[in-house]
Amino acid sequence: MTAAAVFLLDQALKYLVVHILQLDRVREIDVLSPWLNLRMAWNQGMNFGLFASDVDVMRWVLIAIAIAVCVWVGVWIGRTRPRSFALISAGMLIGGALGNVVDRLLYGAVADFLNMSLPGWRNPYSFNVADIAIFLGAVGLVLQPPEKQVAAKTRRQPAKTRDAKPRAAVPAQAQVPAPEAAPAPAPSGAPVAAPASRPSAHSTGPGHAPTQGELALDPTPPDDKPRDEPGNSR
Image (cartoon, rainbow, N blue to C red; front, side, top):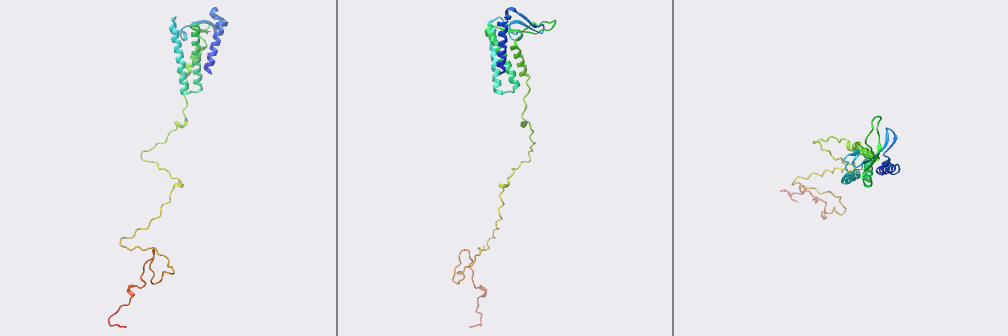
């Protein structure tokens, strides 16, 4: 938007001055002397007549340079996406450069018509709106304020020690209860008692064989059996 506005304003004023006011024939028009005057000048070089030459090749060299600068600035804007201040400055530079390119293509030189002087001193140079835009745009790109850094990136990270290793916190739901202690194993050679079972009504008979889980016990202890002692007879 800025480039288009500068380009249209520059071309409109040049058309007014050259074709309507015919300043190229009148040469001078005092508007607010000596502060602001219209002085016609055909500039075949750059700003303030730099690199001016009557050779036609120089005109095409300056056109190529201006187009290359515009393309480079446009690519830079597309890649970096700067803030509004830089966008306005770049737009002014591009619009002014393209305005002077059109002058070189149409007239063979840039139409300069603005002149500002002081009492007792006359400025020998003239300029146009495109020159002002190019100068302000270039200065704006050079002096643009730095971008603010994101606050999250500027925060200092806490110092980390090499010895201390952070332990991952275990959620309360993920904690597993400790398993119950298993019974100590019996020493080797000791009989292992099988778990006792409740006696049933049919397991108390003399001819009953012990089932799984029951202990085979002799109902008559070996010490209580009657012994035949010598001299005793029945």
